[in-house]
Length: 348
View 1: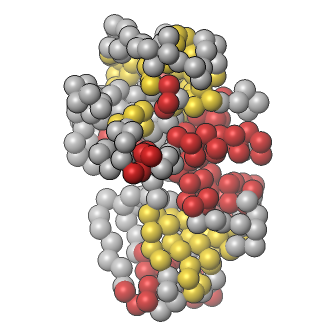
View 2: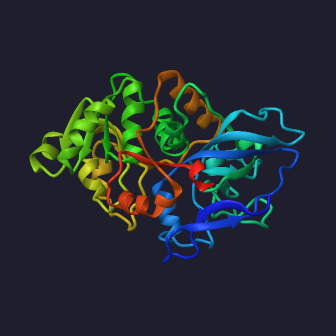
View 3: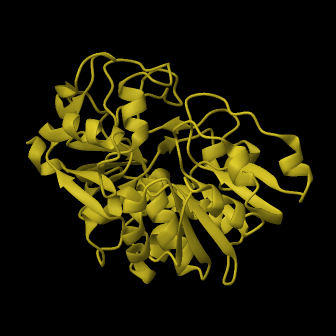
């Protein structure tokens, strides 16, 4: 497919702008998708601005994709033209390492292929993401999406949803567990909804009093200001789990102290600088500090089915593609409730 319309960045210093990209013609095992909606993830901004290093320009971000199948290869059996489908954070992996065989393609030991700014498995091309009219993806990395939910609100589930669902399932969060969510943004609001739906007693930890009303509306049972020293003292040894979604620099030690014995603090946010961790916070109480990426394809499909069954979607603000640079600035300022989603019809 030549001259596919898209929006992307030509350098770290330049705003995103219209451009054309090439997509491969669908092969025997490929699905071609007309993109209807694409969520805006903080990772898009980091990559477009080369904040993590390694960005290959021009870059077209976007890995929260929902659309309709327009063509399929002759060996595709799982999808047909007209199906509603999704594409998440990666579009291929080696397929033969232990992680891939265990349906954990996100941890592919030979390097999975991310949806944008990533080397394809053929080592010849660099992927371009969902800020585009169409995308072509191998069928085993395409997900079925229920039409029961508003599709624009489903799009962020492909990143924010699975990023929070995967650790909740892995650490078996269940009814009666006391779980805190640190940070109420794109990831945090999904963590609250999902954890509450699983029966956990959810507390939102935030530096902003203005988040309390939203926390309650999203399903949190409690809200605590972390800027109040007496609150932090009172909350010591309170939680079985803490989901840390904050990407800004912060002191992990302050929150490790809030865990019960055997408690687990799960890092989802990626601060720009390393953080020192005091060993005594882990040793006393046998606490764990762990990290989690997104989920594999099988688990992502499970998450989408779970959300359809429980009527769980992201809270979104719709934008046209020509508003993307403003949306980036507002995301950086925390001025979004809680995920921007691009109506890709505005690209045409």
